[in-house]
Length: 411
Image (tube, rainbow, N blue to C red; front, side, top):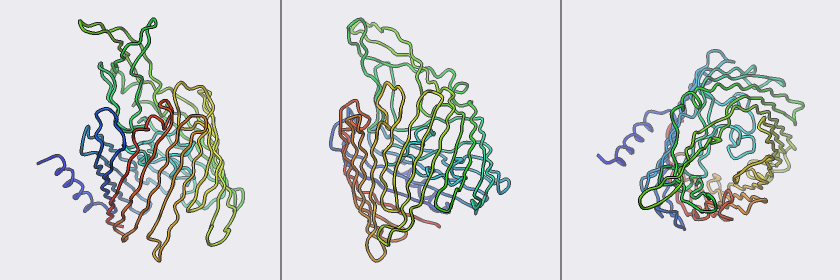
């Protein structure tokens, strides 16, 4: 049996056993070359969700390419059971418990310090949970003042699109981040290969404890604030490197010996939402929001914005010393997703991410048609631009057109 056939059988079994399932076929074509990566691709994506009232929940996803290197992403996003109404055991993000406004915004500023699964396509990012014990004082989210804490003996770093490192160099997938390919030694530019030290991956990465405390205060019916303080490893690695020259009979190069490190960091963040009220049937509820964060590694930042159910606009910036292009570098975000039709079945959308310090931009636009409660079709394009060293400029060969088919089953 072929690998593709086995995947379809697995997906069929999952969709017929889960309380709620989503299966998406994502054919798309790219407009530029990226080394040996294929120009057209089909991604299979499935999401499964089991939930028993407020007593337990399991949510997982699997996404994979069927051509080329077959980059894939799998994670158990949530898996918990309630010991009491206020205490949960398992994997869940603390923000889920406090109804934090950024719990569903993996692209927001506060989420950049949280571990995420970025998936294999840029729209697939999601916050991952902490595996441990969680307490939240207001299980019904009805009190004006509530608090909670979470503790986990494990750490799972942010995961994303595949990047293969070897002595012959690096090979990133379409949306992988390419590490340096050359190094200058005594004025001579040499090709750079990599050796990864995995000897202490369990001690220095996985078995790192995390603690997370949070508080929510409703000042008035229109204004609510959240405070979070955590001690955890950095979500993204700070590599510890050494190196040597590699001389062969036909060539000379440099080898970087990389040891992934995730330094412990204290992080404090605040978020406030102010509801301006219903400004009319066409505008509906408008919320203003502000978030800010301070980290013990001498970095900080904030985000300001407005949103309603169809529109969101925000501006964020991160302060600190960084050697590489970063996402939250004076980033302007805007999105529009209205609904039209008798059943609101037509939904055109447009998204813009523009980095004002860097020369980087991502434009995404398309149209979703909701055929029925079980099926929808989504057609759109992604455009990336900017300098090759900019965060989005690195993906400038990844312009693409896509046509997604989604089926849903269960409740």
